[in-house]
Image (cartoon, rainbow, N blue to C red; front, side, top):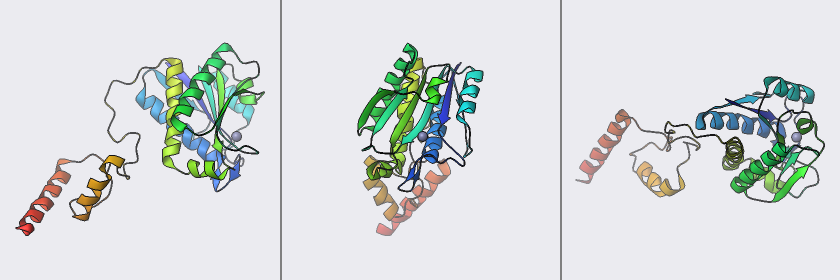
Length: 242
Ligand SMILES: [Zn+2]
């Protein structure tokens, strides 16, 4: 069983970067929880341990000492950027990183930029606590700039948060060589069931305007009872048309 340590940056009294109505600590937590959910449900033989799963403050040294004590196989620290950049994505490894850390950074970086698009600021090295004090391969990701308006707008979109989460999940799975779980995934996974799929938008609009469906939860699965209700509405409609 592989142990993946996901470290949501900041938290509690430390919001991290704050601008344009976006708090770095909130994005970091949302992404971390998403990575745990999708990696554990989508792949076999992997457990995700979190520095924090709520809005609490943690010292940097506690984050790395807990990850080291748990014997995690890799560590990924999740952050957003701010301060002087023009926007985009970048990753950090330690200045004298191990070959494994360099490989983890390369794999993660490529997977995330492929999903996220936008400006790629590159794979960088810096003397940061999280990547220096972790005993395992460790990478810190800086997911867009909260103080660049266009990036902040992207961070407010659930599709962009999804892309960030999926990129991390894909990169970690590739690096560790994880196999996908055998059971079929429910069709509702990885999408917002309250928003119709692009391809179904016109049809969904038509059938809700005619009153066959009430318009709620377009992406949810349907029961026999619900199908019966729709059929009865359809029959009534056909009757009225005479
Ligand atoms: Zn940060």
